[in-house]
Each structure stands twice: as structure tokens, then as C-alpha cells.
Length: 317
Image 1 (tube, rainbow, N blue to C red):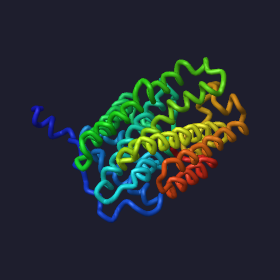
Image 2: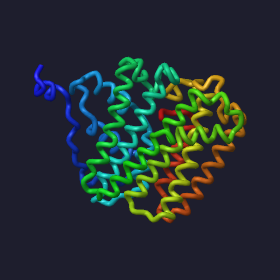
Image 3: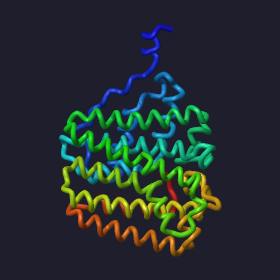
Image 4: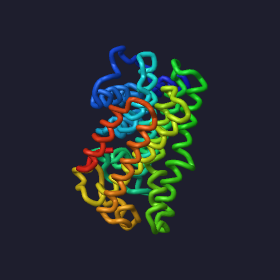
């Protein structure tokens, strides 16, 4: 096959579809639907070649999810009409990174999970090799989306890319996964386990919040308060996830449970009641930090309440 023919057979990056002018406000459910619709358009269709790869990407990305990270980013950005598309696309880029991390986390060489977001994990459905390639493609697409934010000044795009890169790398998600695989047995008290939770979960929440704050143009004090809010939110979120892992059934959680086995968690170290108290303490600290950000936090408060209401009964990430 000629190089021209090969090029035609492989899908190019999708064109950037416009966001309708009347989109962006409304309820949390409306924002989540905007994210879902945008994600559908920002990755290649399932019938584009290589078909199996694109089906795998979409299998993981378009699965049922609360979209907490992109919704948080969008609400903090609080965009006017001129930046609505950018705020939505930045949130979608974050969701692609999050989804890629779940694909990798579920692999047999890591957590060996069979179910995620109420459906078979990507490697179960498409094989390990294609799952890994799908994760790489999603992360790559995320940075492409940020680079293509034409309505955002270049220095701001650079900062957004740097924030996301830091969250992913060897001081972020990747570090957390390495410690979880090879260093968790040495964690014998709550403080280092909480640091692990920060790396595995908190860093991407902080990136989501900070990227929204940067898009909004908040000052350094406000960005610091937003980061603190997201850090405590993320730590509460992971503690709630550990509680779900111990107490929920797979159908309730939308994924495999009891995955941590004998690994130390805040629940195994503190017990269920103390872990719940720790979760509540972080939520209080998150709300206090949000108050210090000097922004209208009405919908963010609603997001926090909604997330932890659903997590008390178990739901897809």
C-alpha cells in the first residue's frame, strides 16, 4: 500500500467542532452532558482506521461517568461566551488523561480489574496491547487539544500544558502508581498512605481546578486557595473510594471491589468510622479553602454535595 493510501486509511485528529452559543450554563447535569457530547466529537469515530484502536479509546472514554474533573474545571473557569469552548475542551483533555490512567491501572500487570464504569475493562474487551495503545493515544490527544486552543493566548496554553504534564509524570499519577505497585507494603501508617492517595487521585483534581483558575485569570492567592480546595476534595474522594471498595458490591460501584486486598489503605489502618471522619474533615477543609478563593462557589458547593452523596452509595468514577 502506498504512503498516500496508508495516510488515507488512518484517521486524522478530528476537526474542532463549534460549541453552540447558548451552551455552558445551567445545572451540573447540563454541564456534564456538554462534556459527554464534546468528548464524542473530540476523538475519532469508531469506524475510523485503525478501527480497533479507536473503538478501544471510545469504549473507555464514552463509558458512563460523573465527569467530576471536567465539570470542576468548567465551573471554576466560569467562562463567558468567548472562552466557553476552551473551558469545555480543557476539561475534556483532563478527562482523557483520567481515562488513560484508568485503562493502565486496570491492566493485569497492575490491578488486574475486569470491570470499570459498568462495563468490561478495556484490556478485557480489546486485549492488553490495544488497551495500552488506546491509553497512549488518549494522553496524546489531550495535549493536542490544549495546543489547539486558538482563543487562548500562547503563554496560557503553555501553562495549561505544564500543569497537566506535572500531574501525570514522575511526581504525579505515574509516581502514585509505581508506589502502589512496588512500595505500598512498606506503608504502615496513615500519613504516607494519604500521600499515596494524593499522588494517585489528588494531583489530577488539583490540575483540573488549577487549569480552570488559570483560564479564568484568577490571581495567585485565589489560585492557591483553589488548589487547596481541590487537594482536600481529592483526598476525601480517595478515602470515599476506599470505603466503597470495602463496603459496596460491584454492581453498586460500577467496577471491581476489594481490589486493594491486603494493601494498606486509610480504611484498613484507621477502620471504617475513622476513615469516614477523615473524609468529612477533608471536605470541611475543602469548603473552607473554597471560601478563601473569593469567587461565587454556589455550583462548586453543589458539585461537592452531589459527588459525595453518590459516593456514599457507590457509583462509577
